[in-house]
Image (cartoon, rainbow, N blue to C red; front, side, top):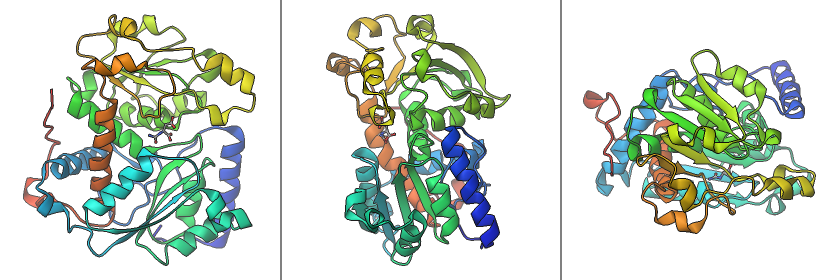
Length: 359
Ligand code: NCD
């Protein structure tokens, strides 16, 4: 972050982050809000965004997706973007990499703790401080709630949180919302979005619930009792959010859903493998389930899927999870450009997001 913090502030931040982690709870993100200006900001949590900030990134993403390559390919020609991924990733890592390269930036990266000095005992803060000496922005995925905030507070240059354990995944929420605007059939204010699966440990649904609550979208949460959306997060969504049902029965809400957002049971977060085995196949979306959903519902999943949507469903026009994958690249191009102070939108036409719907 760009403001210098005193050592005391930093130490107290560190202990409060340890506390957050030990409680597996949520509290307001300590980093500055976006406030209409992304330049130089860390992107750690959806808490930093107001609705206008989300709208701005949507406009940029629609503009970038529709722009001729000659307008985007040199945008970040002078920038070096670093990726530090200490948990597995296919889409987030590669889409950031593709986004950076399509904007003309150079990239440097390490994937896997075993290949970094963290395996020698180096702290995340020291690693982040080192990497910022080589680059203009760091994309960070690591396993601790609050780790991205900690790295952001330890550095001057922007950090983008690409997943902090069971905490948040703000860029996934932004690409999910972009997908809802692009592939869906309604305004966010009048939508019903049903989130299904491991709502306790799934960081994508934590960030997406925070984002959609800013628009007053009606949210249903469907999960086994053991994997419910954390109470602390629901409290934090506040009065603007419209929580519909919290249930373990999909049929109670399937028929009213405009978006069904399915997630994987997060095996790596379980300490008891028997419990994982018992819960992993609780929900399976098949063509038969889809036959009971609205004709214009969209079916989303952040991927990877490990059995919770059968592959026969892929032929259903309502399945948009591979569109989500592509949309993630445009969204991340938009975010990288904005955080590094660039845009493809001429100042004169900045306004409401203008979606080009595919369907
Ligand atoms: C998600 C993640 O890493 O949180 N994947 C992704 O980034 N697309 C979801 C998951 O791993 O289940």
